[in-house]
Image (cartoon, rainbow, N blue to C red; front, side, top):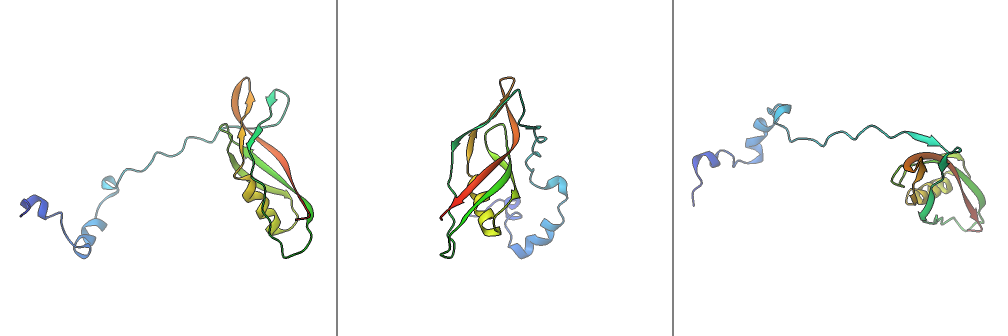
Length: 134
């Protein structure tokens, strides 16, 4: 079955179409997703802010090289108004691989978000992840 002449022009090999595709202006490019809205304001824990509560917690899994581990990683995290951990930063670490293990676990945690004036808000807070005899 033969295609109409207007359709035949569209069917070409990659080598034939490449010069044509490269010549397209940005006006003809596929539309991109709109940029994310501005980042929400992040509050520090203070009077008037109800603290977030953990609703899903993943324990860190550290598989050391057969040695005993005893230490605490202190992380500064940002929890958004949906209860998702958005940022993590090590404030006080134990060792790079142990710190990375703590970060990986905490990024999977989910929270009931913090609240200010009855509305969910993003907060920054410190949490400790303790490693004992692992």
